[in-house]
Image (cartoon, rainbow, N blue to C red):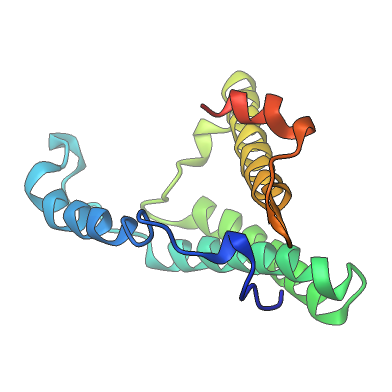
Length: 158
């Protein structure tokens, strides 16, 4: 994507790095505060499922971000998109055969619930897209200026 040195948006403010202590506190407090429900004893984390889902999503996100500079027809972008879709398809297959699936597939068989989950997923994707757009549009090479056409979008997220 290129270097942002000297770009006003690349300066680190006082809030930079605040997520690290928060994440460490969450990791430290989770075992003490989060208890398993009584009926769920003996359930193990589905490591292959987690790796398949994470790998598929990382490949698709990386392909999407690389497509901006390399182009949508770039062989690496197409390979990453294909690999991501294949990994997610294998994830769905794996979850249908796993002893303890991460998301039980019967949840999405109900049309109403599946539509609600799809709507929430699309809204989340749109929100992150808007955040990326807002971040890119707020900064200009010669100083920080907010474009007037994004002000209504900023109001939605505050």
